[in-house]
Length: 221
Length: 221
DNA sequence: AATAATAATATTGTCGACAATTTATCTGCT
DNA sequence: AGCAGATAAATTGTCGACAATATTATTATT
Image (tube, rainbow over all chains, first blue to last red):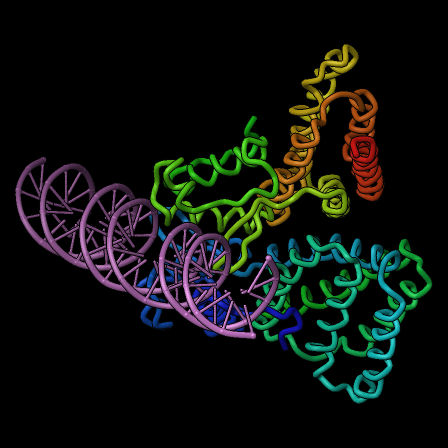
C-alpha cells in the first residue's frame, strides 16, 4: 500500500506514521482532540516524540493546533474537500504537463503496460482498482514530473488528506471503468509528449472524481 | 512587511520566525549546517524549542534534515528555482481562477485602486514596487481565492522560499513596469469574472518572472 | 605509510520534571 | 438560583539530563 517508501528510522517517525494511519483510516475520528499524555501512553513513548509527531501532522494539514490549548484532528467539511480537489487539480495538472516533457520513455511504457494489465480487472469491476490502481497511476505521473518539491508536496500531504476524506465518507464503488478510460487518454497524451493536452485531461479527470465524491457527500446529509 | 499576520505566542514561534528570517534574508547562508546547541545558545532558548523550530522549517522546505545527522539549510539550485516557479504557476494560476469566481467586489475594488495608486511610483521606477507591491498583489489574489488550504500553502511555505531565492541571488531591479501592466490585466480579468483568462494571465505572469530570474541566474555563473 | 579496527568525542534523539497557561471546580455575593 | 471571582486540576510549553547514533581521532597491523 505504501507507494512512497517512507522508512521510520526514529521513534518519532514510527509514532508519526502510526498516528497518521490511525487518523486517516478513521480509528481516531475527525474533530477529536489529541491529548499528548494519552497518546504517549498509548504508543508507549515519551510526550516529546508525540509532540513531534503532532507537529508533523499539523504541517500536513491533518491536525490543527492552538497554542497552549492543544491539537485536534481537522474536521472534514464539503468545503474542505472542494478546496483539496482544487489544489489537486492545479498541482496534478501541472504534474501531467511536466511528465509529458520529462518522463523517461521507459517509465511511460511501464505505466502503459500497467494500465493494460488492469484492463481485465476493471472490466470485472474489481474494486481494488479504485484504491490502489488509481493511486499508483497518479503517483507515477507525479514522479514523472521530475519536480521534487511537487512530489513531496503531494505524497507527504495532499494524498493522505484525500484518502482521509474517502475513508471517512465510505468511498468505494463505481467510477471505476470511466476513470480507467480517462487514465488511458492521459497516458496517451504523455506518450505523445503533448503537455498541454495531458494537463487538460488530468484536470478534467480530477474534476470528475471531485464531482463524483461531492454528489455522494450531498446525498449523505 | 508581514502581510500574512503571524503572531508569535510561544517561544517556539519566536525562534521559528527568527530563524526563518535569518535564513531567508541570508544571514545564515544556504547549505550551512544548523547545530541545535549552537542555535539554542544564540537564541537563548532550550534545545527543544530549537528542534521544534527546525522541524517547522523542514516542513516549509527551507531546511533538510537527516535522522541522527542533523539539519542543513537547503542549497539553492537553478533546478530548485525552476521547480518552485512551476508550482507557483500551478497554484497561483488556480488562485486567480478562483478569485475571479469568489473574490468579493469590495476586495477587487481595493485591489484595483491599490494598483492605480502604485502607477506613479512605477513610472518613476521606484524599486519598492518590485518587493512589497508585487507581494501585496499576489497575496491579495491568493486570499481572494477563498481556498484556505491554498492560502496557508502559499503563505507558509512557498513565498518564503521564493524570497530566499531572490535575496540570495540579489534580485532587485527591472521588470517593474512590465509586471505592473500584467497585474493590471489580471485584475481586469478578475473584475470581469473571467476565471479562465485570469488563470492564463497569471500563469504567463509567473512564467515571465521565472524567465527573468533564470536569465540573471545564468548570467551569474 | 596506508588501512582497519577501535576508542574518544560530539551531535542528535528521547525522557522525566518543572513552569506557564488554560480549563474546570468551588465559593461567596446579589 | 445565577453569576463573578478565586482556587484547584489538568494540559501544554520549556528545560536540563541521559541514551543512542554518527563523526572524528587514535592505535595497531600489514
